[in-house]
Length: 174
Image 1 (cartoon, rainbow, N blue to C red):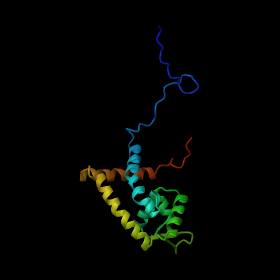
Image 2 (cartoon, rainbow, N blue to C red; image 1 turned 90 degrees about the vertical axis):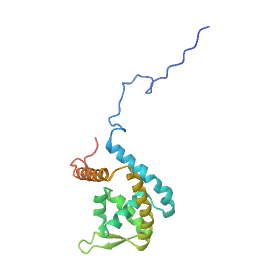
Image 3 (cartoon, rainbow, N blue to C red; image 1 turned 180 degrees about the vertical axis):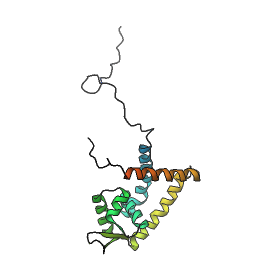
């Protein structure tokens, strides 16, 4: 009795053999990718602990964090500083303002511009989340020595400066 051979899986693409393809970016070796993953992993508990309770997403929290650190910042400067597009900043500002957490004040120097500040309610929400964020940050950094943390801070500053000065950043992807 003849044995039956296991059928060979057909290649995707209608049965035509395809040339081997390789990823151009290694997820294991790309520092940029790993920074992105670290940001996602460290931010993940936010939604569980605070998102629903405060009706706040990570972008909204990050805007509150920035406004708390830089009271009176304008929406344009906030957009430039955080790297968020203007429409995202505008949407977040409107939501935080409607929640009573942020206030916009007209700029005396430029009537089209507004200075942003947290309200008392905003400071209360900020204070609670910031305490948890400090603990989370300390946990993540615990694996680094003081010198390594200082080096990391300097390197991230250099990379941020380089990224902000990229003349091709606004070029469309072809």
